[in-house]
Length: 187
Image (cartoon, rainbow, N blue to C red):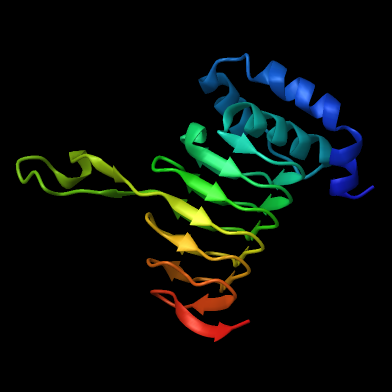
């Protein structure tokens, strides 16, 4: 049984357990999520339930692999049929919205804020952070080791090549690559 068929068959049960998990304190859910490692279906299902219970919105058939680190869950929205692979780090402080049919390859970082440095009397690391939302459209493939910085929108049906650093908006139906990421091909 593939992932989509599994989620469809057990949708009611999954929603019930996610609702039960949502009654737990947020810190406990985050702690359990980050310690729920493993590649099997049970581990993926447990991570899905923790995510569904804690994030702002989570669609169906969402696969979060092990060793994915999530921060500020309440500002995270994930569409249907999304996969987030190993060693990804998503900080949704400023808001992160991931569309439907998105694949995020291993080692990717998404950061939805930027440090400020306006107060010279305070070290930069103690200056306030500026929230900057990140939007990833539908049918997007994010290659391994990509860095997506705050304030960026990635258009529908786009590919972000491995190792790219996305600092500006990306048009739909296009391939972006490089540091900083730039348009290399329309699709």
